Length: 126
Image 1: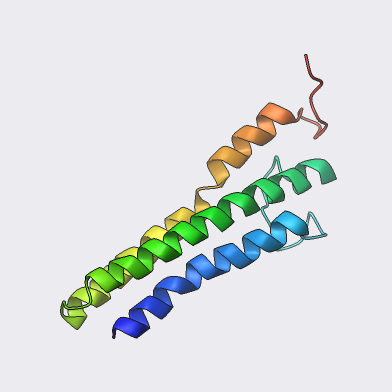
Image 2: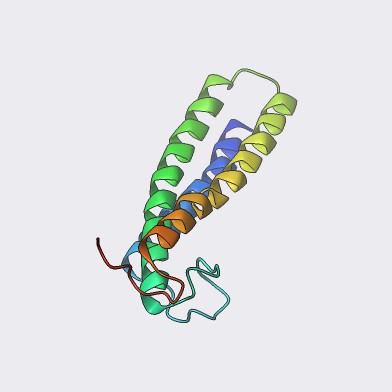
């Protein structure tokens, strides 16, 4: 059960690391497609699209690494508890990781609004 919990708890962090690395280097091509960091601000221009993916990708990579390491450590620490407890902890870990996947929305949207105007053009420096 311990190995199963570790493997399952690493699925989301590994996805975040892989997708984050890909987005940093090569964001999805189609801004109006079904994949990518798709918000009103990120889709304003090709510049906002690239900026949002680079920033969200970086955050996801770091978050994925931290979540992965903490998840493995947690299951190593609780290796001697019952399988029922491990299952409950696994469920909580996966829920927290899912919440963590949405975290980039806050800093990325703030950065987009701070760096780009309503037309998706870079704001002039003062």
